Image (tube, rainbow, N blue to C red):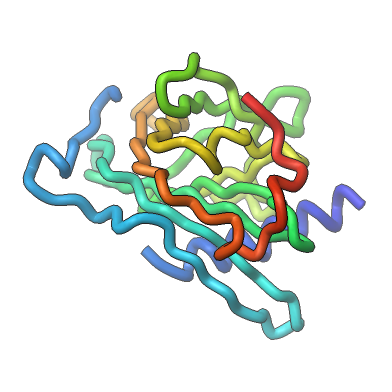
Length: 188
């Protein structure tokens, strides 16, 4: 069952990566504009007949990484899996996320919702070992993602350390994602 969920997460993560667009970061809001237009909802069917429904949001800032990467932007996606929040995917445009493995199955990525205390989100690299994304472990989607106005996620990057990405997450709509209730999502 776990292998099936992981395989499904990989297929879905690859679909998310192709379906749209602290530390050493640049705020676009301060520069007079932002690429974040709120949550984008997508609904598609794979060639294998799998129904993919995602809600995705882009970070309002970029991280300035060492050469050859330059500025990169984060993207956070939630997936509908059988009418519930199935898992989350954090992707990065053009860089390498380092997932320090703990017990060979997960890594911890700092997340902060609104003014709550930061928490550690259990994530893992996808089974294809892509370094452009991390996938939530099991049913470990922090519930605050669905209710917060702002989210900060801080993955660790190859040769650039931990970088923060800000998301203006207000306006998330479970119904637009096709989810009834909060499903298996867990706190903080």
